[in-house]
Amino acid sequence: MRLITDMDAIDSYVKTLYDIWMDKKESPRERKVCRQAHITIRRLEILWTKDKGTWDVLKQKLDASPMDTVVKNDINGIKITDDMITNLNISLAKLQLDCKDEDRKYVYRMVSPFIIFVFICLGYKAGILGN
Image (tube, rainbow, N blue to C red; front, top):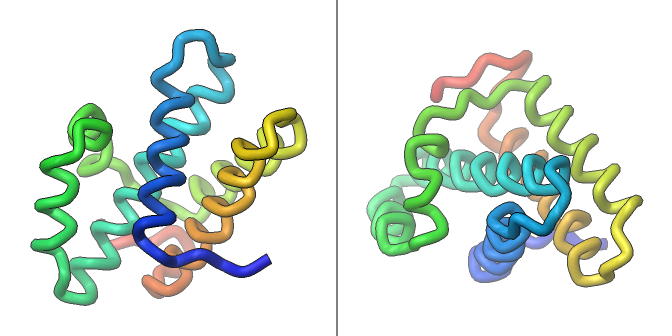
């Protein structure tokens, strides 16, 4: 498996996560994990773009995105720690194992390493994040 870092692909995965957590017919566990993954990915993207000097482009995209404005306060307020990343990835792995839908299973399989990759690239260690 190859790590996907293409932002259009990531946006597609976040859209799938959003569709799942907004669907009241989905299980509460799956909705909670997908919402957490959506918020975490967007927060990591913000930290990444601020670090790389491309924040303005992402800010315009997020402000124009209805799926991201719904959780804007959560995105801005989330504190990312080692434990949170670990627990989220364990939950995504469990969803992947339990999932019958191949497209959904693929999304879970792709977002998990992306979250870990960006977290590590940001260089934060031992749960100390400069959010």
